[in-house]
Structure formats: structure tokens, C-alpha cells
Length: 159
Image 1 (cartoon, rainbow, N blue to C red):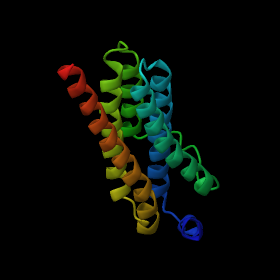
Image 2 (cartoon, helix red, strand yellow; image 1 turned 180 degrees about the horizontal axis):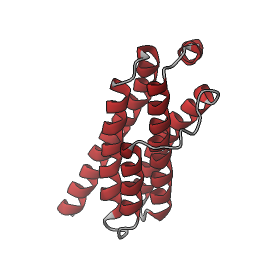
Image 3 (cartoon, rainbow, N blue to C red; image 1 turned 90 degrees about the vertical axis):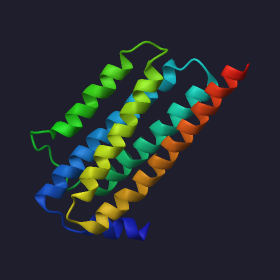
């Protein structure tokens, strides 16, 4: 807990603050999209999977909001990457119940990749490392989900 406060107490340059806003936007969109898909899911496995992913993105969003709220200001602009991810989530959610899970999972991977790219370009390495811990958990969750979904497909093919 103390290390989080130390990371948050650092000063941030404007470019880092803009990146933090974009990361917050992407992680919030990920949480909302996965929660929405959780509500649409037809089976218990899918429900569990999307609830778990939503919780990981929500944890990142909440941590950023809690630690950075005094520094975050609406810049009036959004990075194209964050806007692209928001649009991709909306498009994926508009797809049929059959295709939506695969499409949202694809956007989840794109979102994680883009957040990692933003974190790598941050100047405050201490804070970047703090965010990376959240990203590692999201990566583990996505890998686990991919494995579970592959098992479910292979079981249904054998049946």
C-alpha cells in the first residue's frame, strides 16, 4: 500500500498525465464492455469469464482514479488510440450473441496491447511499473480465459 502512495506522490510531466487519462479511458471502457457482455452471456463459463475480465479492468480504473484524481484534468482531447478502443468495444457489443464474446475478447487483447504501449512511453518509470502490475494480472486473466474457452470448445466437439 505504501509503494502505491509513493508512486502516486511523484510529479508527472504533461505527456504522462495525458497517457494516464487515455489508460483510464481504455480500462474503463474495458470494464463496461465486459460487464455488458457478462449480462448477455448464455452460459455460466462465459458469465464467469467476462465478469473476471471486467473486474481486472475495473481494478485498474479504480486504482488510477484513486491515486491520480488530483492530477487528472480533462484535456479536451482524446488520443486516437483510446477513441479507437471505445469504438471497437461498441462495435463488438453490437454483434450477435454468438459472435460478441469472440469480438470482445479480441478488443480486450487490443486494449491491453495499446495500454502496454502507452505505459512503455511514460517518463515516470516508477508509476509505469505500478501500472504494469495491473496489466500483468489482466494478461494472466486473458490467457486463462482463452485457455478455458478453448477447453470448452474442444469438450463440445468431443460430445
